[in-house]
Length: 228
Length: 237
Image 1 (cartoon, one colour):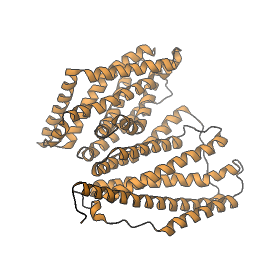
Image 2: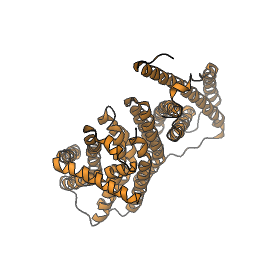
Image 3: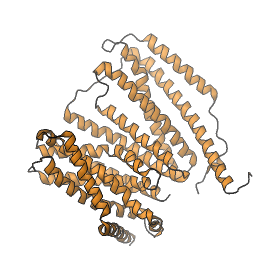
Image 4: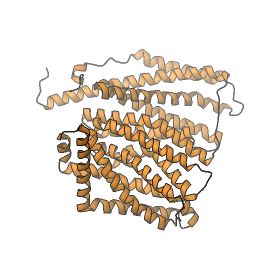
């Protein structure tokens, strides 16, 4: 059962990454604090008028997640590289996509935890009133994070092993993420404002479509990126 | 090892000088022809003449990035180094034309729409395309190992190309939501001939530039190989 072996590999990688993180907590604390700091800066740039803050909240939230998330993606490979562990990981038998899936799931959990903090702080700082359609917003948040993490994990596999990794990852990642960010921001905005004229459902469909396309593309391309 | 590494490639076929001269002269001719034959447009006046160079640049941009996509796929499939170098050359030339398209568009937009920039689907996706390929070129310059550079930039090129229609779609939806005026424009037949000639002229220039750039890339690779062989205490065979 080759597939079951791959599932076990994925679980092992997720467990390993999360355990490393849980024991030091240095990465999570700094990335989450950065997310909060970015929100504060947006608040200062846009505030203090309440209506302005409320209108800008979805955009500020997603940009904070994006800017802070970038640090997490490079870090997830950097930890491996420091110990020469990536080579060892590649030497183990098994499919390359299993490594990608493991990294992706670990990053997904990491960024979701960060998102919880950033959203909570965002609600307070940007005077957001929680709308009746909050379950839909949760769905949008999850879909958006999947898109960001899929492309982020993929591009970090390159940038973390190149010179100038701090510059290269955002340079490659941000333009690629524009569709996901646009759809996520608009959907969040639509549900928050409760404006019935905006078809938020269409944005959810679009976001799902983008996620599927980018997941398939990154899974297929990862082998070529990691083996050299 | 890849089936054709640069050692076995031999010297590249040089781009013929006549092609360069032909493209240049033809380009000058089409400019003169287009400007002299076209009357002033009823709504745009002589501003319309920017479209003679604007639209062909945009088309050449998309053509060049199409070449990047195909050459990148070929490189991942066959591992032939020449595909990688062709993709790189085409991306450089494509980015240049993409930048040119954006600047020409702004020069036209300012007097026509009264603004240098509008967040229109076409404009925004062209800008994003430009940024994606700036990233592609940056990646190439930050990675030394040729095999790694080739495979990484091929992956980035392919994903970037996939992203272009997606960006276009998302920006269009985003915009219809915000209801900003659209700007339909059609080319009337008086202008069509000068315009088609310009498309040909721009294509010739792009081919010439990509060819020359590819030639240079081949020499660079050959030099890298020679330096590597010398560093390994090699002989000169």
